[in-house]
Length: 246
Image (cartoon, rainbow, N blue to C red):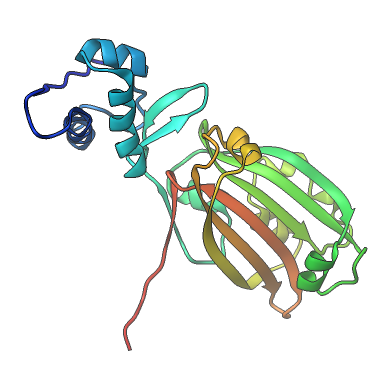
């Protein structure tokens, strides 16, 4: 990247960290810092700008808090790329990424038949202990992890949904190929702080903001087919709705 220059006025009543964050924000806005570009290390920036490392860290944190920069553990600080703005509709993240011109990739963590616990059994309307399919995977856009996705499926003979098939297609597309038509879903969208495990998987600092989604999907006959618990990196993901006045 080109040298990142800031002009500071130490005698100004405006704190140095705020002067830096304002100029970094302007650089992001005018293209001086490109989307996806990584900043030099805090130490290098502190030396280049003649300020302390805590000053640089606070300036960067201001832009992290505004959703303009994201810190990735072991990687560095990066200018946020365009968010995936997902409309509230019955679709898979894989399909939404393709429609948005992104390149979805999937890392499958689990694809196993398990016994339904009481909570999942109630939502799938099956008996506790019934065999169901548990899927866990990490969905990325290119090399940026976006989401940890956990789904439970009330499918007989579900072993034909494999880790390999999940790497190349969205879950709902795979269901349609089986003759199962996702029809309607009840979902709850919320937020949480990333646990240590979630942060490690998504390459984020622990405590980073995540968007959460819990979904129960039914087919055209009204039968509950799928339960999903997903978490998304809030720096790269938002949910879009349309509200109509009465």
